[in-house]
Image (cartoon, rainbow, N blue to C red):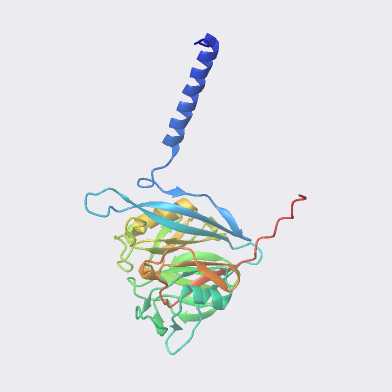
Amino acid sequence: MARVLFPASATLKALAAAAIIGLASARAQADVPDPTTQITQSGYSPVYVGVDAETATVPSNPAAAGGKPTVSRAYVMRVDLRAPGVSVETTGHSGPLMTTSETISQFAARTDVRLAINANFFAPCCATTSEPKTIIGLLVSHGQIVSPLTSDPTQSEAVLAITRQGRAYIANAPQISAQDLKLIDTAVAGSAILLKNGQDVSAQSPNEGDPLNPNPRTLVGLSHQGRFLYFVVIDGRLAGYSTGTTNAQSAQLMKAVGADDAINLDGGGSTELVRADQIGVPFIVDTPSGGAERLDASAIGVHALKLPELPGLPF
């Protein structure tokens, strides 16, 4: 059989090409982040006017002492508070106490918001039918105080507030004066400030919300100067899928997604994020740890406009 001989120059070129491809492949593999050691992010994509979404993973505690780190899965919404059509909505007063419990989907459908998460800690927990609830920490809806500022440093002193003039800020309850309170249009409160001016202050968290152990988490944050509002939920208590985070791990995620200030809201079985591409028809984005939506005492949501439709292609 005749044997085909290739010129030496062609052989060398083929070997060089193979070497380049091999190096590129090795470099690409080296560039893939390890989710058990560092935060990974999908990158933001627009979902509504002024609202972008991304997913992320967070290195979390080992499943057993001495084991390998695990991974938690997060869902992030970034809201431009200056975008046309964007406004923020919270649960208003109802019933004989402060609010009446409902699922986050029910809140979104009732208020016609595009996205919503659970908000304040509450009592009692956790009936499977709707009932009156007492809110812990500040809750303000359309300028009306539903639940007052707490004076207990161990109970929900971390506040996210938006004034009637549209200024958003995060502060501890003692920093909010009576005059400040009169200017607030919307507010929710949580257990601890995680980030302040870009610095991780989660080590100062009180015991509320089990800060040192991994749990499902609901977080809110603000960018520098408060233009962007961040809603973040982290799945947890789902073995082999998502562990949940400590407050310190949550703080690192909030910094990575772009927040300068951030707080921890109620979490655990309450943690939930819903979206509504069709107004009034929300769907659940995350995986509630209890296997179903909890009837929560309060929520915070965002109104936003639908993205404009692109013109049709001429073929």
